[in-house]
Image (cartoon, rainbow, N blue to C red; front, side, top):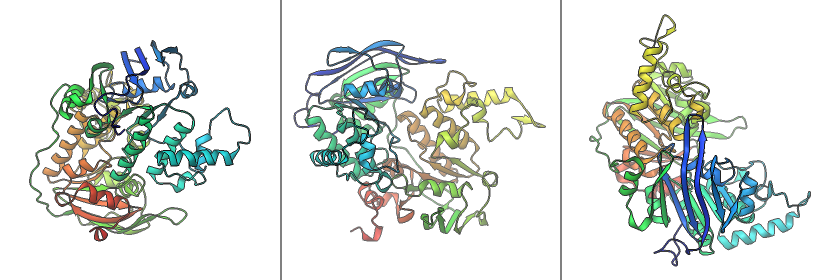
Length: 518
């Protein structure tokens, strides 16, 4: 996404290769895209911005062939085209890299790259495939070995495989959904260099992101969506992050938050030599020790898959520890069940919101009241008080700006960001003093992210203890008091948020211990 010298002061080559006209996509109770136009030039990077539920992913899923529009037309290189499937999209040279990679762990890089290609022989010429992959790897500095298995690769390497797969199959337009969300700062810079080489050859990119600095630094043009409609299309050089945030949410957004001085109290949560191994004996958590005090936000940094999710699940009772102990307010709670942890005052915003955070077939209101329905005023003698539940749900929907047709809409019909808002509303409202938040702002727009950070600080300023797991280093530095960095289940170091920076955190995220950094 890095600008090349030729396009630094413009927006691509001026040769239009893609135009979407009047795209409309409807779902039950909601119009996701309402007469949207979009254009893209060769060698251009278009940033697609908008609040959760604004229609960004729906529009890109139409272009990628995952959805069919109810109205509108698509023109590719000046010709009207019909895109009915991802295969149709790929034949035109349009490919999408999803935030959650679509790779098969037990297959090699080469096997993943040619998977699904219909023009190959039943027994593909794998030596030729390997040679072509190596040639493309050298050409774009992708540094990928074709005979390695996917499960042997880091997250950054897996993303390179996704990019290489699209290039191998002839993609000229790359759609990237939150491309740097799971990368270290160093890997993000590598990705930008790689895509810069592709743009110099006339390839184009559309990327969905919530990181304003990425938009300003790497895109040529920005298109802002709100409630399914385009509200602005502008050259990136003409706007600031504050301008973009205002376009997205219709108001000023704070990029720096006021906070009380760090004045921690007594330890609330203490982990002592915590170890967790899987069935093969591999350590998912390796001798983890730290404590979180009242009035403190303790951040956990690290590339996804290095033990952060397991740490959150051990603390909330979802996984049993192999050895070590967990103490809560001086009491040993090692091995307690999730309901016992909830009654002890622990709230949990899970990393996997779809599988663990909500019940998709239940309504928004029922998901919001999930931790309150056992007691008054939501129920009495085991009978639910529907009017009180509806009143509570409406207040949470308004407070957290959940975009839903009604409070009775089933959660599975909401966008990913609005599902996350539903979980946040429930867990923050029910928190009894200790909040375990795993990626709470993942997938949220700037307005919702601001609200999340304010709520985390409110918990801390009310003498609560917060464990914050995040991939956003700026977020950790903004709201945390101390930060621990995890790599392969180990703690690489614990630092004061005021005394560290992104470079130091990035080196620890890549496996360097704090004492090794000079």
